[in-house]
Amino acid sequence: MRQKQKSNAETIYGIHAVSAVMQQAPHRILNLYVLQGRQDKPLQNILAQADEHGIAIQSLSRHELNRLTAEQNHQGIVAQCRQLQQYTEADIEPLLQGLTVAPFILVLDGVQDPHNLGACLRTADAAGVHLVLAPKDHSVGLTPVVRKVACGAAENVPFIQVANLARTIRLLKELGIWFYGTAGEASKSVYDTKLTGALGVVMGAEGKGLRRLTAELCDELLYIPMLGTVESLNVSVATGVCLYEVVRQRKGVLTLACFAQLLELVCQCRKLALARCLLPIQQKLKFSLSFCVYSDHRK
Image 1 (cartoon, rainbow, N blue to C red):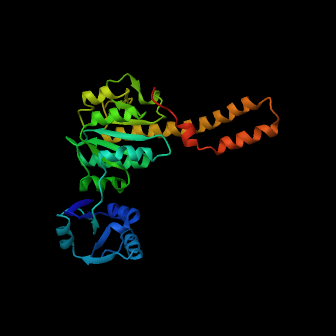
Image 2 (cartoon, one colour):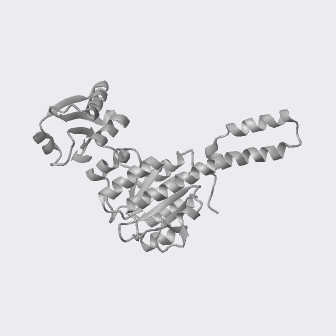
Image 3 (cartoon, rainbow, N blue to C red):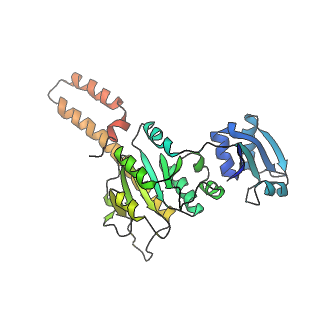
């Protein structure tokens, strides 16, 4: 969990949030405060890492920790850190250009509950999403609650709030990214759709779903089959369903593409001597699958 303290420093608290900073950017931590008398293993692991990095550790009473965190649930550990530089709209293209695989983006169109955003970020990190986008207006940002629920994912997955979501989607479509929105009224299931190239999954707000313009900008609208009596899923749960369908399909495409490349080479070389066939096959296998498999482009 994270709380602003000064213009050049912030306070992060909670086992998972502090552990994430300790593992990913220990240089940010200026001071570490722990609850007097707490000796459990998760805390001791963090303290051992702090000692390795030469980070100052101070024991404080619960009252003092409560004061530092404005009475939030700090779980007995608080870190004073250098403020993390936030991503902006200008970082979107450089982030995508630095990838060696097809971009995988999550768009959250107006999610307002910090618990939902935190859960979405956690799932996005687990599924290998490269970038999470959200509008600046009418949506929650990286609050302390979001960071705690995300369990460190907020420190790892780039999260960018944009001034004009429609404009950003148009820009990304020009870069070859396809967008798939979720809507209960859609006619095509997420399980009947090819989700393997450079793509963005677009999720709507709690209760309201996708805004009209956002839905219109999506290349396809998909629905999640509902076989019971409930009519819809929580946005964080629905996000998990969609993201992991992309993961499942990408893994399958990787395997099939490798087989297809070998089959193509065999067909091309069937009239040649075996010795002449081995070299191109060996070279083909060494070629980066990230470019062979995820080469879909908008047409």
